[in-house]
Length: 158
Image (tube, rainbow, N blue to C red; front, top):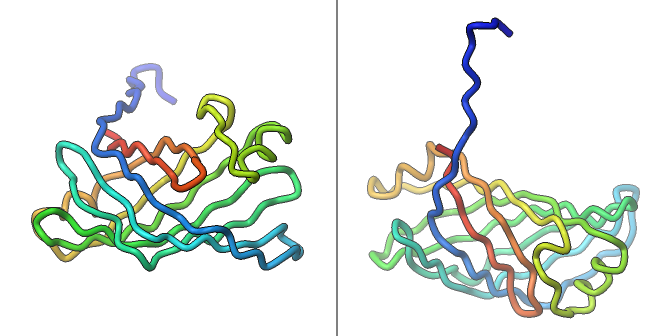
């Protein structure tokens, strides 16, 4: 790196909170990659200054619970804005913590979000000109798992 180069620290702007309602996991069992399971998305809400609407039922989260304790997440679902526009979400991420914390989460117990790591990198697709900015922006999600849903605070990287 040149001594003249200026490092720029990315900043983030809050966009919305997604409350994604989920069903009980369907377990596939162990394979070479880890324990595989699927969690159906049953609905939810999106609330923010630039993005408001609902999470449509019908999506899901395909998970691999690795032997090192990391949960690899790959969710796909649709949002519908208050104006009726549809947005597809593809959201990948990692969740991990101490063995005790992860066991509590799997039992559906309440665990404070600062007790474990849970971040995602959502990507958006839409044909709506009003929401085209979603398709050309990088996002990060700070997430929390509750018994009934996943809360994702969505931030745009500036």
